[in-house]
Length: 419
Ligand SMILES: Cc1cc2nc3c(=O)[nH]c(=O)nc-3n(C[C@H](O)[C@H](O)[C@H](O)COP(=O)(O)OP(=O)(O)OC[C@H]3O[C@@H](n4cnc5c(N)ncnc54)[C@H](O)[C@@H]3O)c2cc1C
Image (cartoon, rainbow, N blue to C red):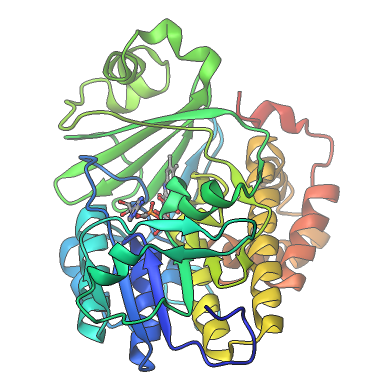
């Protein structure tokens, strides 16, 4: 097994068959690398991650799957945030500047994942519908595929692969095996989610993010249904029932905001529950292995940034593997952790109320000359950050920080914080 020396990396085993695994596999297979995906078929009836940001569209084009994704998805022209009865903001991607596409999609995740894995297969990656057996090399921080896993490839891999990539999402096979610690975020939320037949929407196709009595809720319009999620601190859940179904149904009818928006909705699916998902791995690459997508880290469902961050890391890892040097892997690790930390900061401004207090101040003072001059500029960069286009741009992030520091005027951001 190579240890990220200057040797060319020719053979890659990818664990997991989610969108990030498939993205990486397609990119590498196209360059002639021998790529195997070990994909444990999903058992969950529903998957989260249905709302995309515009910055994913160029990646879908580059993977050659945009037309197919469009055929089964809902066009998403923007995002709406309802913070209180008086405070709502809608962002229309049509206003985005630069070369960024002015739309995104809301996707049924099963079909999205299937389209991407099929793209990888067409590009030449071999897909095994089972989990690979991976072992730690005793006394080291190296890993290897078991002999039986290699034998089961029927000669596709005659030797151990040069690199093993973990893209198993939050299952995190390699970090568990190697005991790699991760940093957990401060929020200990639980997300409950299901599909329902209808809800109120301010704008067709928009993802709606709404502050509720405790926490916040998403509504994602999909073909013939709406995905509804509720994100709240575990301490609030027990009073809504014992099971996740009871809790979801009771929240829909008892929360003072949700019952107005979806009180007469019928649930079409079982309820899924996700807990304690804010997590960043302390290491992202080591000798002969790398982590990518949610396995490297996941921050928060708000702003729909998960798939974008994950697929962005797959593109970065593909470049790293083509480079093959230890320096490139160090750079990859720094970039991935930095990108996750940046989103951590960005979502923090949503939870502590500063982000929308700043927008409200901008609206209230729209006649003020300084605001008239600066607000459109700041607004443009905010839009580019949240669409994913500028979430790595130092200038856009500096403007965001400036606005969060100086843009509150005399308003108390706690009025819009997530309870
Ligand atoms: C509550 C919540 C809401 C979210 N909402 C959004 C959103 O609206 N928009 C968005 O962009 N992101 C959202 N996300 C994040 C998004 O779901 C993830 O970032 C994205 O799915 C990551 O893709 P991935 O390929 O890294 O991992 P996954 O999508 O988790 O894929 C991992 C794959 O690996 C397979 N697997 C697991 N273990 C093994 C094994 N041992 N061997 C082989 N295969 C295995 C799994 O079956 C799965 O197919 C949300 C996340 C949460 C928690």
